[in-house]
Length: 144
Image (cartoon, rainbow, N blue to C red; front, side, top):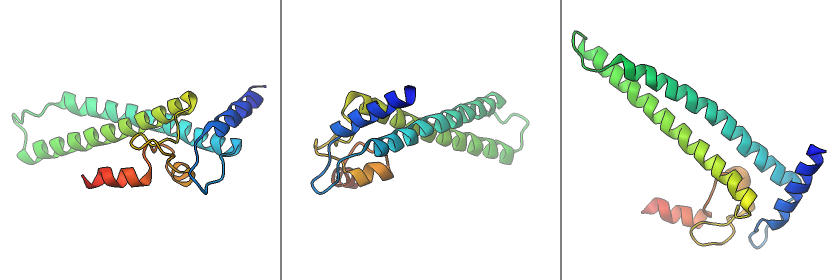
């Protein structure tokens, strides 16, 4: 019954998703694939985020005062902390974007460009389900 409820939900979502001129309407199967991809991203990045935060916490407790340490060791420790902070930040971004996309699917706002309000495009969303902007608006944003 739950699988049937999911198929009904996916069909309802598919019918409500905007499409660009020339795109085929979304199918329930395509929506299910996007949802599955996003849910997998949330699970995977959630684990990666937890691991990165744990590793970062361990590195932070080591200290960096350098007292009695070789300068190379201090620099290496700082580099390692910076790397872990970057990994944690990137995992947090993907996690947040994936959760936002799932929320937008539930709210019926998924697939609409947050900048211009036009449909993002089915192919773009299938390739990058976390997209919140159409290609044109994203390119314009990246040029700034």
